[in-house]
Image 1 (cartoon, rainbow, N blue to C red):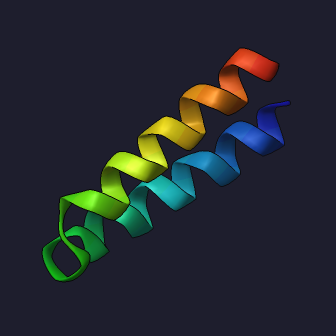
Image 2 (image 1 turned 135 degrees about the vertical axis):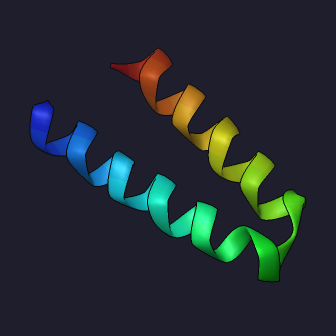
Length: 41
């Protein structure tokens, strides 16, 4: 589980770095995906 959390944090970092280029739509989708994963955990 901790390994998965670390992977999610890495994705969050990438999303933060890419947010300037991709805009907020992908960021919102990423947050929704994270919420779905947490709900399934």
